[in-house]
Image (cartoon, rainbow, N blue to C red):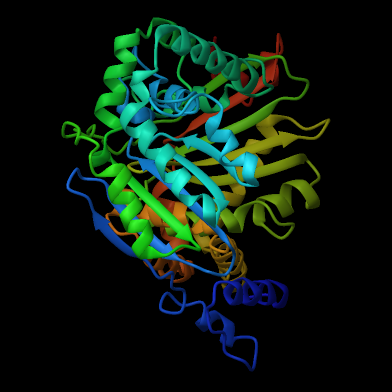
Length: 468
């Protein structure tokens, strides 16, 4: 671990109340063990199936609340996409006993904040408020869980539908390179695969959704038995248990949720695509299908990501951006969904350099890494950065409640963060070499996004299929 990262990690651990040994710097790595990194919490389940996670922390007079629902875009069906994300918007428009606007007044209006987010696999709503407004937050979350449909009519649905459509225009359709993730998902996965469509949904599907379609989706997936309620911060657990019982116990259990069968994906051969966009500079995307949350290979793939792009010393960044000065930027990421994942590489060229040249240069770097494996120094540097990021994410009440809820929802254990932390630190050079050879094969998608009318700027243009 570098001295600067070690010092920053000590600060983060101390903020979490983790004892850090004094003495020589190398002692820090052992202070960052799974046993040392502990968030005290307790869990319970209400008769209606709602899972409750409580973690007391009196260090600040604030509380974070998260209502975590095990539903995302993968629970949709072809022709009916975008419902999960649509509800992220609808849930902020008022419910049976909470008029529109009152949620903001009881969170932002008292110095707190609120928001929500939707992924392929889960939707979570959260707020951070002063401790004396915790009961109000619990009342709001209970009311929209149990009584949202009482005030949802076609006029409100249409208003939010239009907002979501506009969001798609801003973030995807009219954003430079904005359709890249959607094109890659459609290329990596078969058409009926639940990860093949975008979280935001298509314009056609959003327009076609009826009021009853949307309400049926809510009744099934926004029920207590498909939800986790996390509360972290400054509160009296006896009082909070009484409030949770008061506001949530009488909400009816929903029907059992059937999870979609998600098969792992491999590509038999390379797919080469070119998409014309209103951009000034071409960009190269390469996506390899990998693994999801429940496969331990993701930890080695995360270290591989940290080794190859980002810092000046990372392999692709150093070679293409600094040494050869052929690329303006290089990025990599391991994106793990609940069931499957992708490893993504993105390269933007500098003037005078082609995507074909950059793809070939990057491939040579990958092949060398797959043959030789990473160095001990690369592993140490990457692990240090990942450790710092992980621990820093747990310093706030909100960071902790989201981590606990993810563990409970995806792994059946709110304390899974300790297992994840330990496995991340345990990755070896041999692990990284193995996953690079296993997943970064010729079974991949190569997408060139080029300026309109300039398909010749694609990487290997004669081999690339146009996408409309």
